[in-house]
Each structure stands twice: as C-alpha cells, then as structure tokens.
Image (cartoon, rainbow over all chains, first blue to last red):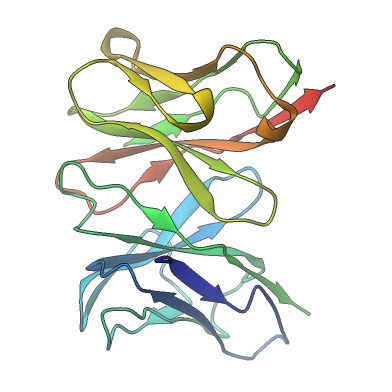
Length: 116
Length: 113
C-alpha cells in the first residue's frame, strides 16, 4: 500500500543533542512538508520541499534543518538550537505544490519527540 | 494575515445526536478549504475538501461541510454521531500561490454513549 512512513514513532533526546526524524513516501509525490503540532495550536509549517535538492523555510524553521536528496525521503533534523523541541512532528506530501488548485496533503502517523 | 479560527476547543455530544463544528477563516482571495480528523497519537486523515463549485461538499464517514463566503465559514456537520467519531478535528485553509496550509487550533470531540 502507498503511504507515508515516519520513524520512529517515539523519540527521546537529551538536551544539547541533535536528532533526525525520518519521513519516507512511496506515493511518487513531488512535494513534502514538515509540520510541528503542539496542544491547542494546530499545526505549524517548519520546512517544505517542492522538488529534489530544493527546500524552503516555513513559519518556524529556526533550530531545524532538512535535506531532500531523494524524491521519496525528507528527513528533519532537530538541532540543539531548537529551544523547545518537545512536540509531535508530522510529515506530509502532495502530488504537486500546495499552491496548485486541487492539491490535498497526505500525512504520516507522526513522531513524538521528547527532550529529557 | 491569514488565519483560521475554530471557536470551540472541546465539544461533547451524545451518540446519535447531530454535530456541527465551526470554522472561520480570514483570507483575501478564494481559499481552498479542508477538514482533517486526527485520532490520538495518529496522523491526519482528510475528511473533505472544497476548491470550487457546489458549496456543500460531502466527505467520508458521513460528514459534510458548507462553504459560506459571506460568513467566511466552512462548518463541518454530521447528522448522527457515532462513538468512533471521537477525535480531534482540524480545519485548514490554503491559497493559490502559497505553499502551505494554515490550520486552526482544532476541536476535540467527545461522544457520550
């Protein structure tokens, strides 16, 4: 079955450490996105990529980094510069950029990151 | 600035009762509108979407939503709620030329037997 796979489901990190969250899709989608979810705040965009080897900052990119070396993969690194990294992280993909009419986003199951 | 407001943080209904979840948006142009549902600890599943045309849209699981331009609203409705509908519901708005969805804060739905 096609879909988006995020791993791991739960992740614990010590303060000061970098950690990488995995997102893989086999939907052949061009665009991929990372969102952060905090209770009562909805979802906020961290980074997005419309095509391989290209990505743009979203609304809350500080303290995060991404890469897009393959169409199916869009890993997110939470760096030690991110002041409050504990959150639920969601990866999404679309067939074409969200700016295009008719596009809908498909989401992975999420990774819950906890800083200990 | 673009924004989406879901006025109700929590809603509790009895099983079999009707449901309406409110969503208001602030946008300059014609928006693309979505409703997603999220079960605890899970990703988001698309319930329905509106891009153009008929302002009453049907979705999965018996949900529907109506786009009212004059009220800047896109409320989600279901005539008879099932216990399995208990989840968190998010309204989202997109706009042509912008590569992101703006999400509301969500409404958590509880269903009493």
